[in-house]
Length: 263
Image (tube, rainbow, N blue to C red; front, side, top):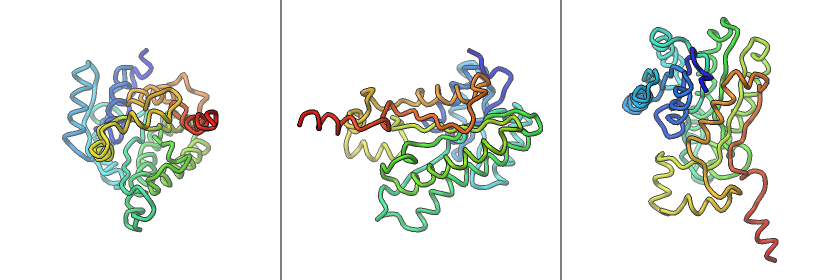
């Protein structure tokens, strides 16, 4: 499939595990990719991987919470590979695991990146999309925004992002711009949070797999496939939706059911 041929896509947090998988998938389907990350080396490495696979990519560096920084990156992208037809709001971070350890500064810092940054990036690309009368925004949410799974500030931001997704969908849908959300469950990546957890428990992903009806945690490519679908023109009637990609985690409690049956 070449669903993004002739289109440009901007992927924030593109230097990370999920972001890089999204960038590679959209490029594989013909898209020219702006790989945006706050870490120059990470953005450059993923852009090089895209090009090595035969795609087009541009490494971009910006702080997504800074409108001027985002505007400068967008200008660079427009000049080099074109204005984004697709925005994937993927950049995020989580620090504090529980409410007791979360101070006000922690709370504000996480919401700034995980919610305000998505707003800044969406607002930056919308004028160009409105002028063309077409565009797709995909916000990367989380099952943490649907149920309590720790990381309370991150979770609150993701819950807020669902509401923001719906607001953009309603206001900009009539102007040809679809906004949707993809909410992953546990995804095996090499981000710092998982490195810390794996040092404490090397079998953490095997342990978590028992909570997932499909018998495993997710891989970045699972999320990339979902993003490619909702961002593509074939999903033209999908707007304001939240596609939960979690192997069935939020469908029920299989471990609890198993214990009930055993009783």
